[in-house]
Length: 343
Image 1 (cartoon, one colour):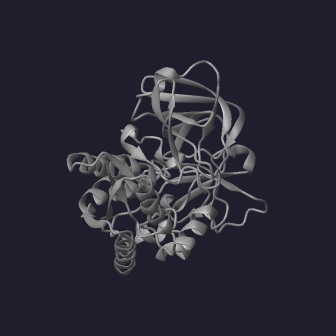
Image 2 (cartoon, rainbow, N blue to C red; image 1 turned 90 degrees about the vertical axis):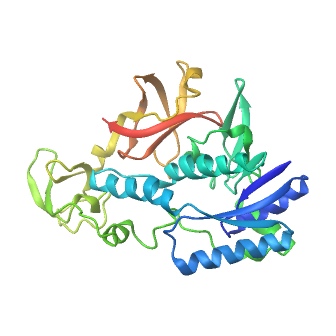
Image 3 (spheres, rainbow, N blue to C red; image 1 turned 120 degrees about the vertical axis):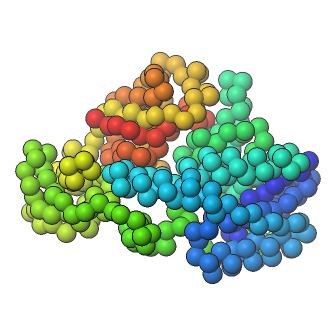
């Protein structure tokens, strides 16, 4: 059985090559070029991936997806901030590139499976092949992959590993990347997303007003793209108490500030791109995540007109338009969507 292994040049995907070989798979490594990584860093990552591939005795390929990455990930990322949203480019990249275009490449070139170094699992649930939480709850990446399709052709070798176990085994095996630092959450952001936006030579929102929930002007903001829901630091305005960004209105060019209590919402609405498994939803409580860094909260779920509506028993903190809302039934991912409203 042939497996195409996505190799980033990091320790996770490097160890995957060894684990797949141990299970008897014929492995070929592939690193794809987004065109938006630092040139020197990408060169080092490719060199590391090829070095590990040589160590394992497997072929290594570099695939250029720079045009697609700009069109499907970068351009929507920029537009989302111009529209007052808080985008999640990793979700889009996973759906369109890794488990879309790269999966197509694998199947069209005679591979039986695509493998990645994500911390996730695949399991059978109600007769479906679904995404399943990883053993390491701290590293579980299913939130970013809720739209992954063709799961019957996917292998996640690290699903039953903790990050510490991954590094320890890689070091024991003498794999070059065992001590390599993890990459940042968004691969094309070096420091701050604002710096990235300002470097792209695009028209960005102009200065406007901070207002309170009653519409009273509090001061001037530097452009709506500089703020995200729940933000407190970096507002550069003295109000005598802690205020947070609770709303962004690009039409009126305002950013609403309020105390923390205004961040909590009981109802979150998300538009759905893949409704494949939503027919198994029932009238029971589900664990729902509206941000990767938050623990899931219990909610009743309703699906209608292409949208998921989560009704939380307790308010969920700072759900932001553009982020993902992901629904879990125990360890299994039932589905999710992009947040379009919260109230």
